Length: 364
Image (cartoon, rainbow, N blue to C red; front, side):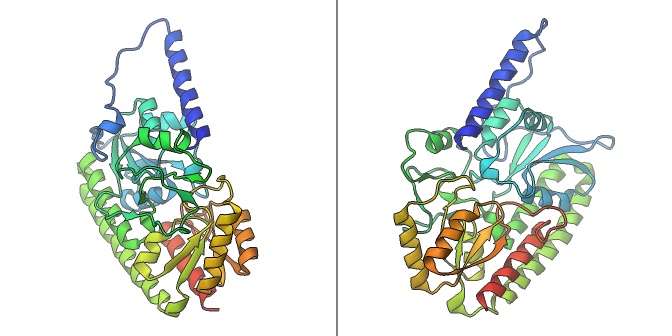
């Protein structure tokens, strides 16, 4: 969580205290949630079950997860999303209305692996009783590379890939921050959705959680999940076939930030380097030395194109492209869906667009 997000949550907590103290009659005490750091990721609380007259209230932390949930849940739930399309989850700053959404939810679907580094504090501040469902459960997490140019910042501490709000907060804006970029995530890469096979596991997790919370519609969720998984399996095969069009010695990627590791591992690419590591669009530019090393690596590997991403600042990419003498490719959808009507409006659309853009750029 960046400093502005931490201050915003502190302000929200202070506001809540002032409102409570101003009331003439204190409200009836409500059960307090167990602090997030002491609770297993997928079993924070038990969500109330839906019935035939009321829809289950479901919250998705960001746009990609919301699309997965929508494909399974259909119209059987009331779904809200915290971080919408074309929005950067790294720079998300909670508002009072967002706190109300979290408090009102019965199920919260999150990615985990510290991608939503702000969620533990927001959940606690809202006094939510929602069950938190970590969709990366059951997926083998990919450690971040330590190759010297894979990301332009340093690891100061390792993090467990479960919830670890206190450690993350101290690391992100405490004494551990160095002259280079502080690591916004833990030791594991959270961008699991870039491998379609991982999304199949995520969809299974969604269906199971929905069925447990709303058993009356369990068959509906299971049927939708089965149909969607069939589409995802076809998408995975399509991506594999498209990548085969690229000569193996040209399957090299340089991107805005470190988001395509799972994609590269699954579909046979080499990540030559990233400009901003895991950092957001507001991250400081890498040092001149970092740029020089990355430009040297790009030239040595014979890379001819660097890809933008839809939630990162293009200026640093333009600078690297100029120094390395390479072209700038299409903007890929990585950490967020595109706006409605765009080529990346759904998860399947975004993955199909990305691979076709990569194939076209690398086969020229």
